[in-house]
Length: 234
Image (cartoon, rainbow, N blue to C red; front, side, top):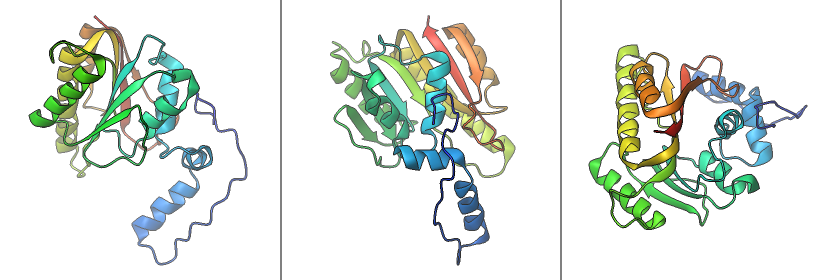
């Protein structure tokens, strides 16, 4: 799989057995079997197909340029985005602070993981304390990351309005965190759903030199997800 999302393998097969599964499980299994990005992730050793979304974002916007050293990965479980950063030689020398409600499956000496809810004030205090220690900042207020990536998505309940509002709330929380703890010149990437990104995108345009909406090829065609990319915080 190339970093631009192009699949470069053929005739990959799997022995997944759908017998005895529920209809929804069978549908999910069929989609996985026929999904080139899920198959590529297995072949290339990535924990999840979402790795290719980050690789496409990097290929287009170069968010992990050499000056970017300290990265916060919000919603990092199972760990595929941190895995991309910390196992690719082109990104050598970077440190990642990961945070998620769920445990991660990826372990690395340069991944500093916190398990908890990002929307919790207490968890954010832990995150800032870890950032302060990692960067050597003299105060928590002075602790700044070079890049924040956010793949948090609330579990959809099927109500468009509620799903949109929950997504907006997470985006607002992440943007507020960047306002305090993203360094000048730093980058911010966050996942949204269509319809929930309007206000935050306008805020991003004011706060960053460049702001972009991006739908990776590796996003499922029927998915409403879209990524917002803020380049070079003012």
